[in-house]
Length: 115
Length: 131
Image 1: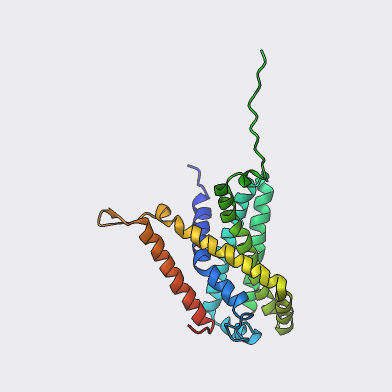
Image 2: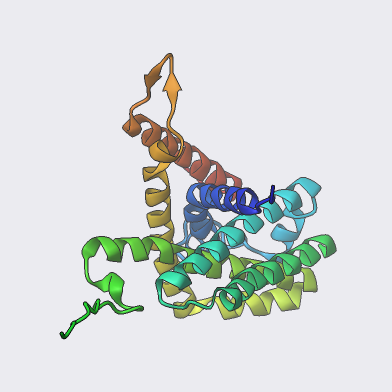
């Protein structure tokens, strides 16, 4: 019997969608809105603060895992939505969507290993 | 003997503008575009962070300002819409049976929102916020 890669693709998609649903609104609040609004201290996103936070292996693992799942979910959904928007060349769409997600994830991995 | 075949008048790109429920469907799918771009920006920020203090300062400066803030607000709206639509389908995606009885959908959705509140407050406190 042929093995299908659907369960893996679907599993990552569902996991990423769930992580997005629970975390992204609060993440946007903390990383983009709270400091300009004066709700969080000005040094929340300072260089030293984030470097200290990302020294621990656990925080690196969580950061990588969370962002990897979210970008995978977004990439897969954009691939499917491209079809709905009339872009029918799935091979090209797939390469762009997954390629961007893979490049971003690789960049993040290198960055986290260096920090 | 003339046949006039039925030609479906349906735009490949604009079909979803025809009905409010199609627009809602497309808005739901488009949450992925904004969330994806936001995460790519976070990844770029991490990369700048790894290159050193000067590179990170440059990144912060380029992400700052009215454009960045506008993008953040729009992304926030789409992100909350993703959360709403994702939780809304959980009773169908993971029906729960306890003691031979089906748990009502509203309870499953409500439990997810409660979890969302706990996770959000936890992240807020972790970032140094006050409640």
